[in-house]
Length: 83
Image 1 (spheres, helix red, strand yellow):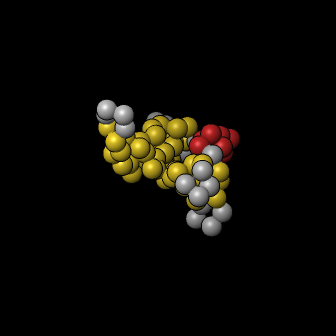
Image 2 (image 1 turned 90 degrees about the vertical axis):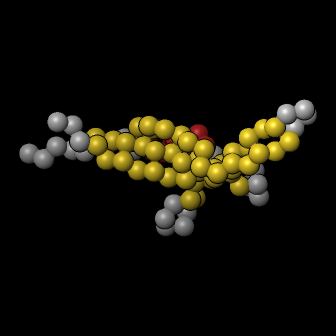
């Protein structure tokens, strides 16, 4: 039976950078939503979901809008079978 390994990361919009940023545990960061997704894909991770983690409701012209400040990305990849 196939077993899976899962990882979740937060990708936040930083107004100072004017871009989406993924902060790594070692203090480095990856700029851009596409770059963050591509980085995990190159390592064998498959994106399972991209869910708004933090958002704000802002007024627009005659209606309200949801302004997403960060996403929680959930990835999975198969665990190598032991011989």
